[in-house]
Structure formats: C-alpha cells, structure tokens
Image (cartoon, rainbow, N blue to C red):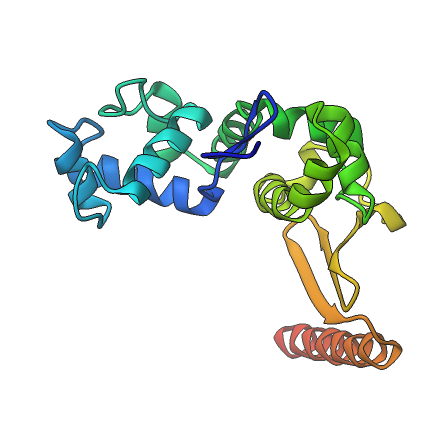
Length: 218
C-alpha cells in the first residue's frame, strides 16, 4: 500500500523539490542550519508545532532527499550546499544528488532513459516498484506528477545528450489535457487541434517580438 510516501519497498516523497529547497534555505537563514528543537524548526517553517502532520511529513521527506540528518535538526553537507550554492552549476549537480537519493526516481529515470512518462506509466511502475497492477494503476498519475516535478528541476542537457523531442517526451495527465516538458520549458494545453494551432500562433508571435527587440538593440 501507499502510506506516508511509499509504494512497495520504495520511498516516494510528498514534498515537492521547490518546497524542499525553500525549506533548507529558511533553515539556514533563520537557524544557521541547526535547530534546538522540533518546535523551533517547525516555527520557522510556518507549522503550528513539531508534532503537526505536515511538519513531520516534510521532515521525513527532507531526510529522504538527504538534506537533513536522521534526527532532522541539522542540515547535512548536501543540504548546506543546496541552501547556499556557489553557482548555478553547483546547484544543479547537488539537485541531481538530492533527487536521485530517492531510489524510485533513480529507477524510473534509468528505465525511461531520461524521457518523460507516457500514458502507460503504470506498466513501468508495476515493473519497477514490484507492486500489483491494481495499485500501480491507482497510484500512477500521482507518482508520475511527483516524478515529473522532481526530474524537470535538473537541467536536461546534463541528463540527456540530445534535446530532440520524441512522443515519449510528452506527459499527458488525462485524456483531455496534454502537458509537455523539455528542459526548463513546460506547456499545458487542452487536447484539441484548435488548441495546438492557437499555441503555435502564440509562439510565432513571441518569436517575432523577440526578433524585433533584438533588431532594435543593434
């Protein structure tokens, strides 16, 4: 069963990467990366107490990411680097370490070859997590969204040798919407021919505007 962020024998963090990053930044800025008590840490994170469910979930997930110690009251070296990166390259390298500390994300990434999940993601989840088909189908959409949120935080040119798009680069959350992600660019549109045409017109207009601005600067 999927309880408290797990499926089969794999951890599956509920806390998204952006929130985890922000949390360690606050931890470093407000408490210098070391808390005197769970309540102190909960307070700077905006939780009522060190016993609140949301705080305990975040604490567990940041441990899974390798950002805080097992007791959860001090940043790890990885957490320190993500809280205060020297530059963008260092941040990206440490984000990869953080995300791939989640074995399930690492296994999915390897299975997909760095591509985005397809509509048959549940089949791969069934194989990777070793859970029955019913559970894989039930949890596939949720886990797929969490995985995409995590993996798209890493610069794609460090993950794959090519930016060439294939149909497997398209992630569709349901039969009515198409979401595509390549690198740091994401787009979501209704699954209709007219929507595709409209999106293309908007992109053409933006391209023309950017080219015009470049001319003006010369």
